[in-house]
Image 1 (cartoon, one colour):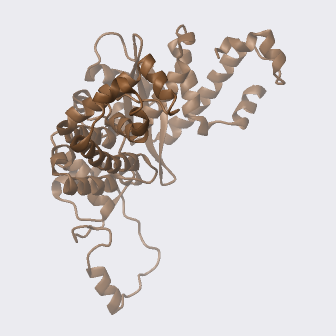
Image 2 (cartoon, helix red, strand yellow; image 1 turned 45 degrees about the horizontal axis):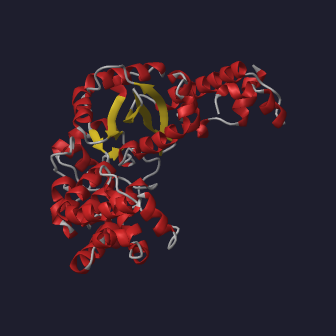
Image 3 (cartoon, helix red, strand yellow; image 1 turned 180 degrees about the vertical axis):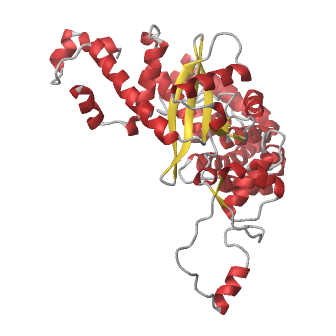
Length: 411
């Protein structure tokens, strides 16, 4: 509903809440947003990361900018802005100018940004290069490219199934199929490999019912083609699990590296996109250093230089250390439990921010899904500032509550 809905007499009659005008509502929203902004200014600190992605709606191109920082030893990802990019160029300079403006709202400077998280596209790589910071390429985007490479050899079969699904979506064929099943045919989206997976899954489920539609009988894969599709579907089920895992909580770059290495071992054709030194990786030394720091391995000189900004001073001990017994000395001299190579850390302590870097920029994708539900055709006249305000409050819902609203009322 638009904000002006609170001015509707019928809406007021249906609500038990005290009536409030749209002007007062908007003022209250701005007040809450300012309090959140002040809080973010304090907890962002002087060393943080930026996660971002773009989304086009009509003639507008919005960029979601998140702040990635540590609070009480835990990494937090909070929305800083959903701002429209200026008309014209969408190159690296335009993005950097946008970041500068967003950070200025929080009294932060570009030189406080320690890393950026985003897709592995050329624009993002150029942004990272010009800012002089590492780019943590989105693992989901990278894996999507690798799977598309794997599926390239099966494109004729996928095209055949997609053609079949398109025919089944036609009115007469759809009506005939609906008599046999309530499940609808699914067509793929060429930009997302997961849509191929959904299409094949649906085809497998409704294949017996599809045979009742005479008009598409010749398009149904049979014999060797059908067996290849079933085999391909099993591979795609594995890929689906790998796609979802990095999006979960508690997954770090070391976990992603382990997943990618295992996939490469089973599917060598995906090596070019998933190997640590792939051309698509902007900062291979930095990512290797993060993985080693998480696993407790010794870093090379170049890797130490790449993460030097994240070093923390060693904590002094308040009491004299106890002498180690024979067994303890043996265990301490052995390989690190977390290390995959048997290397030993040199004792350098790194920030929690480094070890808990988000491996994907899927937070932006989830935000854009919510944006689509807000910017409906009925809201095309909404001002970009009001749209950003609504999304800012929704995305940062964990930073305000009843007490914040009560404070607004008292003021």
